[in-house]
Length: 123
Image (cartoon, rainbow, N blue to C red; front, top):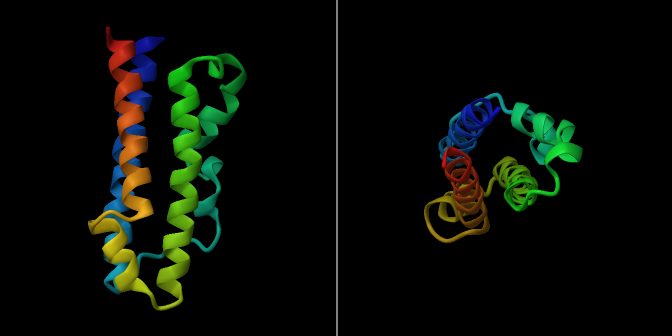
């Protein structure tokens, strides 16, 4: 089970790190075909659906709790960033991604928590 979970966590880290690139491109005017509301829902992605369906099984584990809450924040930040881009504030979003904005902090936190969980399982 740990090997399957490690693979799932690695995939989640990569797919969520890719959001940084997608948002940066969108902030610079590139059309990405992003949805209008699903980004705010942590259960809209494969990993979020998996976490939600396994919450009763894994919810007592501190690493799961940290990742779960970080994942929710991450998706809220994605939705906020996309909303700002749609309102013409792409430069603001670009600064938030490149420098010390909420998206950057929360994305880094999520990736850190995912890696910490994976490393603990790999021991």
